[in-house]
Length: 97
Image (cartoon, rainbow, N blue to C red; front, top):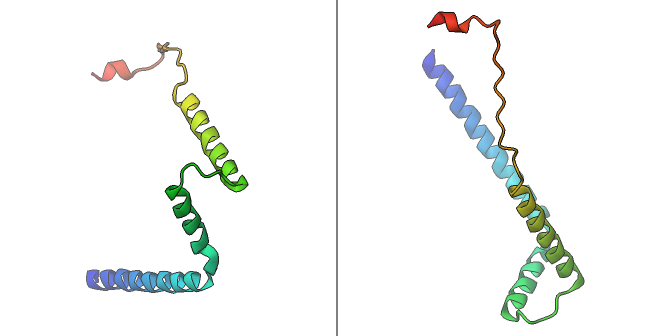
């Protein structure tokens, strides 16, 4: 009985792997061929750091700067440092020692 259960699990896992591979093949075939173009632009920009940024690159840089600023502000919030402990006289847990 245990062997049947283990066999079923392995068969399902193999089917899952096959389905994921089929989806991967379909996704690769449907990918646009212009996906390599942004990588080439990034390589050219890395070679010449003094080159002016294009409009979309400026927007990306501004979004990254804003995200970093907001993250740094959120990471350093001020805590009150006050812990409130409420004692409940109606509890019977102290009798179980």
